[in-house]
Length: 319
Image (cartoon, rainbow, N blue to C red; front, side, top):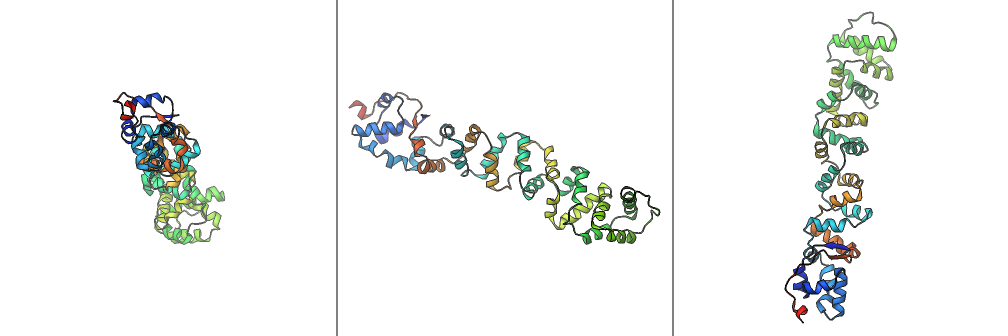
């Protein structure tokens, strides 16, 4: 039995069943009360199914579905499958609010499981590209240069803008790390460096880019991604989610407003049933009534009166 604080005056006004008579029915559900009343000749009670159960507006009035406590009382008795079905009728804002029931760690794990382009939509709500590149570990910058989707010509064009001193520093580091020798002449011209880079095999070219100082790496990546923002998906998921760890849980959730409702719903559905019921309680009362009327008449049949207050007898009670 689902006990609700229902509108007793509704029963008195529309079905001529007063409080004293309702008290006599004890633990019976509203559905059972109406059946008993109909059997005793209450013609209005006989039409309960047609006049109320299939009419969402009347359901909202009788069961006070505008009251969140009543909605929760019903939802808390439903199983996971039913709750997940109703959750799809929540607004994106309601679903997003439901994420607050998760821990920060769980939210970060849920984000990690998203495709990279959707992770980017969250990250760049909170951080600019410049901030992102400054925050992630340098090893993640190096991994970016391992991508085969980078345009070599655009890279070489950017290299031409780097001061010769920094170019020679890169060459020197590369020679020592990759060739095991010192650069004999550390005064290469810019043109010499560009030509040397251009002649390197692909894997060695990537290694050379990794030998730039962090500042040059960031500037190069920023230049490449300005023309093609999709290149941010070449970063690992660890890199993409790293800056989010610096945010509070509420700030992370705020940045998730660009996700599709389906993504949010899949996340929310991972909540335990008791918490999922709380989230689903946010549903619009009329929408909830329509769903109950169409798909959950068995649930409606289980609803009983939460408490009875003394009121004047109805005409039928006096009779």
